[in-house]
Figure: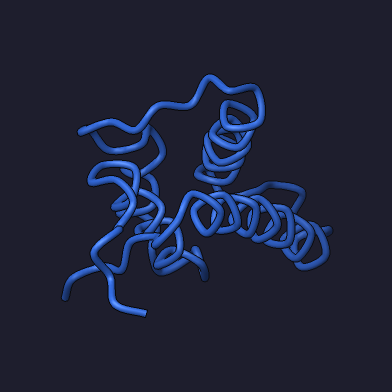
Length: 106
């Protein structure tokens, strides 16, 4: 299955904003569900830092597309079953690696 890439810079930015929202929401849900346990899954903090770092780099004008996977993708692959928005993260990574899909038919 081929992953869809963003069709514009605006769409790509919106995807990253959505990923920030989703990772914040995941943390909030886990805080509620795990209040008695008091321990988050090992992937949560590095994933959160990676997604927020990507968004911060975009906001500060320091972001660059690349041919390599985003640093948090190994976590996404390893814990896909525990990350409800893993497909969104894979689409962000695909756009990061291959660029905006300007050939897509609307």
